[in-house]
Image (tube, rainbow, N blue to C red; front, top):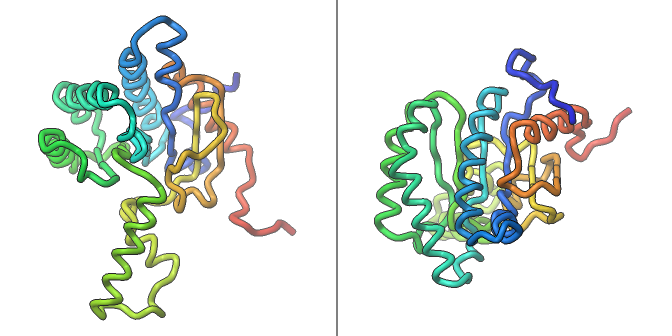
Amino acid sequence: MSTDTSKDQSTSDIPRHIAIVMDGNGRWALRRGLPTIAGHKAGAETLKTICKEADQLGVRYLTVYTFSTENWSRPTSWVQELMDLLKYYLKFELKDLIKNNVCLHVIGDNKNISGDIRELLDAAIEKTKKNTGINLIIALSYGGRDEIVHAAKTIAQKVQDKHITLDEINETFFSENLYTSAFPDPDLFIRPGEELRISNFLLWQIAYAELYFTKKLWPDFDADDLKEAIDDYRNRERRYGTTVG
């Protein structure tokens, strides 16, 4: 396993923005005869480890798929357990976010998020907004198609209100109406958990991202695995749809 990436190395070829689908928590628990929530707790601890390591390596933005729009259709007990876990971390891990200089952001459609969780999220965002370390972006109640539809409706309303003309709509303008308008597009997309698909995550934004898949389940994904993914990224030639020579 390659682990030659270090914070002392030049960060010029380190991905500025990494997006991760945190997949495999439930299977991790099942294989150990544990309740599903134990897998999500282990996955939350992994996120803390990976966030610290990414920051140390020079990554500036880390976006993680926490809860999808499709997850609302899961059993109510499953959803509630996950929301209770989220509340716990927002209450008791905020001090570590502040201490570690993490700047927290949240993207997604929050209309189904309970008021108490929204208040905790708003408080965490406010208390970390001046932090200058890594930007941790939580995709919560998020879906890539939903985001694109939301942007299309927002732009259509601006046209209808005569704030813009059709000729002003281009890729840049469209990007400015996405949930992620304040962040650069991901350079590297990582998916642990054995699956080989995007799963409706950042569909617009990862158009030119490098994709990295691993069979490691998310709770088992560690700092060395992140370094290996980054090393793989560094050895690729990014063409952005162009040819060489």
